[in-house]
Length: 118
Length: 113
Image 1: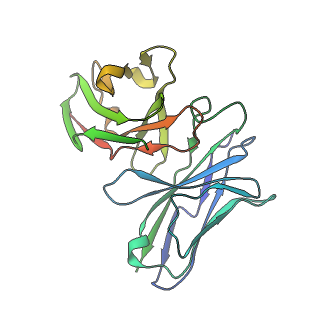
Image 2 (image 1 turned 120 degrees about the vertical axis):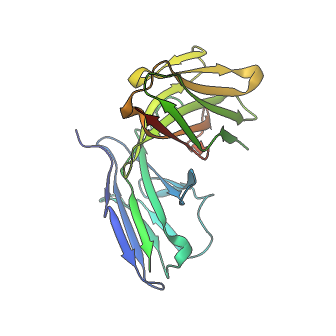
């Protein structure tokens, strides 16, 4: 019974390159959330997606960041023209998405992608 | 808007001693509250959640937390620390119908033998 799968676990990019982070939700889950954890800080919400829809992107930086959750395949968090400040751990979580909000359906987290910018 | 404050970014306890991690929240609507644990290089694992059923909530690994509305607190305790409890602990809040979690800054627990 696989959990939330994120890949790669570690990603190194040079400034100006693009970073693509992938997340496959738990089986049966149709809601995906992305969070960012900066060093020595807690997790900060970035975006909430359902299949083919962005529901809430209030935590996404206005530029260079985008997310998608296509009908087929994993959710992708894309960071264009990365800068040193993008270095962080990026976590994906998923939930079933039926029967109410997060109180009734706790989010299940993947092990994260550690992004390092040289 | 919701927010969470965890007092103490680092806590050191002796093996067998009480673990007490403090969490205070602010929320304009009745909150749902969570404690998560994060082991090194891993994701977050749910310890317990408060969803308005009972104010004292029991979780996994012997942890429990008590919701106190008057103090806007949701402190996490464990009577007797074990070496395997060394990890980082996060308190989080959401509204009942909300779909995003707001996290505190985390408390790193060190257990001394």
